[in-house]
Image 1 (cartoon, rainbow over the protein chains, first blue to last red):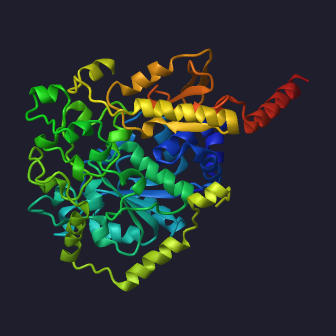
Image 2 (cartoon, helix red, strand yellow; image 1 turned 120 degrees about the vertical axis):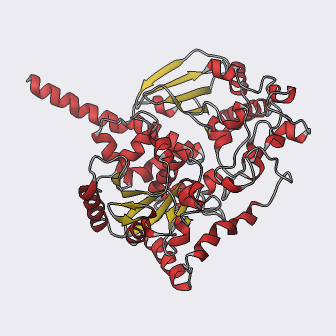
Image 3 (cartoon, rainbow over the protein chains, first blue to last red; image 1 turned 90 degrees about the horizontal axis):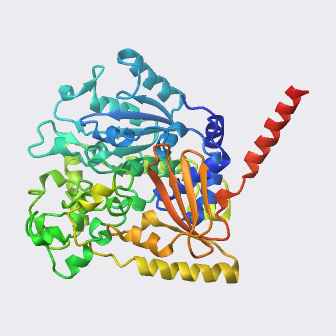
Length: 365
Length: 134
């Protein structure tokens, strides 16, 4: 359960030295794509941060997002961030099952009403309530019920953020994204199939540090991680500029590491941190392994007409796709009225926040 | 991982051309350290590099006189490069996977210094040990 200990106290109780804590802050700053000069201020803010209660709901998903997050052996920096939160409900990871598990969720909600972070992976079937249930409770009902007391919601993975593979044409379950259903809470979309592990924990660290929802793009994703597209940061970009493309996966161009645009790379329309953060502890990423980007952090990447079909134009306005994910919301008749917008603003306002400027001035939250 | 990298599809590695600009940035940062006493940290994780470019950067920086290994939440290796004042700081987790890599342009990276909180804990532990002895 959530308690009154600060993050610094939790780490010190685990025998982590101040030096270890500073290392934690340095890698956290790097993870949050913040300047290393901010490390002392991040340390100050994190020292004061209280362990938030986190409730993690998994709906129509493949567990790939949880797998991504937990694949590293603990203790890792990501692991420590999970020590810094109180993960009160995660039905894949928790020991309890059935009624005991649901009781843990209800207790956590009651004790931390209005303060807990709700993490959701998987889309929500709205075609019929029995398509996906947990302990006899439909996904839709569980989401609506749990969202009511949340300070903020983190939609992890492209399924929770945009509907994902369950939404693929013809969308047999009526899969919907979290933001299609919940309209009165701040929602952070951490898209990807799966998202990069440090991006998931980076978002949680950012929330812990600043106490507020980070700056988001037009699709509700944190700008720190989704602010640049793959193409702009790709090391193969110079070949694109020179018009040097691989035409097949085994031709001379492919062997020379030329641009994979003609082989269907979706880098130009995909916003994610793969090109710099990379995967498997920074070992490599798809383009470096010789395969084009699938665009897995974008809405409807699953129905874009074939992974190996080249984009028709070199760059398209990604904002045009923003409306697609919202269509499902209209289908289930959830209206984003003025009242909900006001509620959302109120929920955001009531959460105590600090800004980068505050940290730079040395003010504590 | 070396085998994997050499098996990469990009046999004729394209270059981002980021190595030389970073070396220039380091040169400016050294001047700033001398003139204004201000340290600079460059986060290498935020840089797009082609395969081999990061190795090239490290090779051009070379190895200097000091290497420090810290054990705190996994190892950290801090090496002064062949250019005095330019340090390569690599943080690993307990599985020895790289969690962060930085170039620090400073007299001594601050993580090497003993931290006040740890010194206070040390005094307390020493005191408790002496109390038991007496």
